[in-house]
Amino acid sequence: MMGRRGVLFVFEGCDRAGKTTQCRMLVDALCKRGIPAEYMNFPDRSTAIGKIINDYLLKKVELPDKAVHLLFSANRWELEPVIKNKLASGVSLIVDRYSYSGVAFSAAKKGMDLKWCWNPEIGLPEPDAVLLLNLTEEVSAKRGDFGLERYEATDFQRKVKSNFMDLKDSLWKIIDADKPVENLHVEILDIFNSVYESSAGKPITVLKA
Ligand code: FDM
Image (cartoon, rainbow, N blue to C red; front, side, top):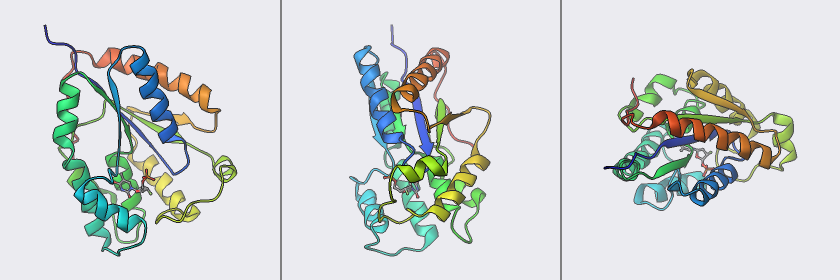
């Protein structure tokens, strides 16, 4: 008998919300329990497209907003076959940013709207769950200064946060990321377990218009 598919479990949020830490903790916890799971992150800076994105984020190159938006999306599309194969082979993917970051960040720029930004995402594998790690500005400030990459500025992050709120649907889970790391981990593990149970036997769907 074929085993069950993996789940596509996506973390979203503004910078410094603790997504990467929580993703890594979740992957470790699942692997220890015998649930095959792997970490994935977008942008994946290791691919050919990812290298251009990396140069853009480090401000080594300038690109028109629409062009760079499509590159971020293409970065997901170049990994779409990998995502589908891993899920089909039973590996759950714990993903650090996905299409929603793509839209929330690009649409925070002048002249870019949510609908235009969403279009190239249509047809990508749809997550079984999206967790939005929501951090207050006070706690964010305590976590230190922003780095020097593009987008790392308070005003811009405010717009991004408001875009995330516009994108969220009833399936999203908004998580209070001000909590201590360990408490957050326990809460997230619980959510994963229920998503894992409820997704058994369900096909992988795709993002729609
Ligand atoms: N980002 C990330 C985008 O602008 N579009 C995207 O599609 C994705 C996935 O890239 F500022 C932004 C979000 C962030 C920057 O992300 C780099 P990491 O997670 O800090 O590497």
